[in-house]
Image (cartoon, rainbow, N blue to C red; front, side):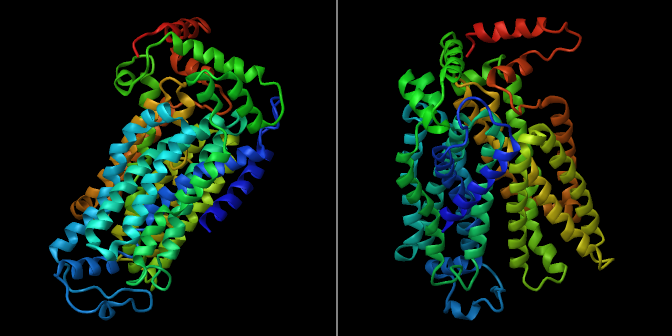
Length: 529
């Protein structure tokens, strides 16, 4: 079911972008094989999104099961069954239950932080396709652990399953954008790269819907709800052998020119591959002049310092924008606004997520990455200010609840226009083949770490600042907007070499052409990596 949804959406999106970008000379560009490969890859992103959202809906049910398993809650759960969609909470939650539940949620991010460092190793040693195949074993194991939670100590099995799933998602969230970025034609690179985020928000929405009490979010079926986290991995495992390996990986890393040509023709149709092979040959020649790029080498390299700073800042802006805090706080706002079923309002936010990610897919190769990111960050900043005003005067003016709700929906909309999807694929655009795996690993770790920090400490910051908590995020968003305006270049329609020239040739007051040539020579001859 989930795979069918992503397939239909991805085909619709590819039709949109096919009309949005001009046809190029090198082959058909959009082929059936390319559609299949992108669809198969983003199943890993769908799984990531599902795992992010699935733990929230059945929280009370699982907490009560934990309590009974630990022997600190007695009685049948029927006494606390959900009534008209709302759970009747026990008067007090035992500290042991709180600890194990918090660990069940947080361990997912910890697993992602650890495994994100291994993205480059897996991608280079196993390749993109075999790498995704290998890590699917982790997802299936994690799904089984959670699906069978009632057969053992539920809290231990869920925590173990979430840890393994987080480890999988840390790898998948790096491998998927890397593979798509390498196989996507330049004209469609932005739109296809955005499908990673589209699949994530689709997964979140699906988990919110089937997590409702009358579907799977109840005492009988919650293990199945959690266990379905591993279902997309099974479908992906069946489809990956049908997908060609990345031509850039085959030629640049493996030196297999004939296989790279075959892969290019499978992706683009029958055409003369000379231009693409020549571009990859030039990139490979540059790489041969440098030592192997590692994470430590990338951190020390002055040549890639600007690109790395931009990549990390964009991932920081995604997580420290306050998007997760908005989801955390939205339920309380909806309740204060008189919404009798706040869970459905939260699902509405998920639907807005999906719709505006589609908008981003349609616009990213027209408006450009930089423009959409600026619009998104500036819009979120204004919404955070409006949100603060709404929260401060919520009890004074009844209509402020409507203002607060509108601010939430607009905040999410602006997030998905740019700051949500773009950081995931822009890293693959601004780094060449050599440093790309290390850069994606560092950016992924930065994303997971900041995600963990926000999730872990937001409730304490909110307790300290109260209704003014979103002023903090407004200030951060203002800083990120200024940074993007002055430091992030436009990468739409540009090759890796052209993007490198932008980063290495930005010098105020320098004669046109001279500094670019000088910096490019330094880039070609460097051995710092």
